[in-house]
Image (cartoon, rainbow, N blue to C red; front, side, top):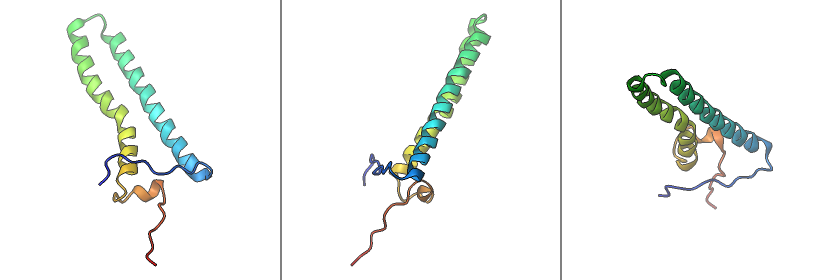
Length: 98
């Protein structure tokens, strides 16, 4: 069983290119959102040190989960072809016996 493998990327096909572009944009969007939440929390709580630490710990856990969700979802879809929604992203060639 392979734990780390990526499918071949035929970027000449527009549907595959569009799917990869969508996934990359989604991940970039969540990364920007993570930075905005952290900066907003820090500027809001900067005057109270104890509240700042509590707020930072709560938001860092939430933001880490939020920011890593798209990449882990993409990783899960691409690495585990037995997952039922894998066919939504890529159609793998069927193995036919002669």
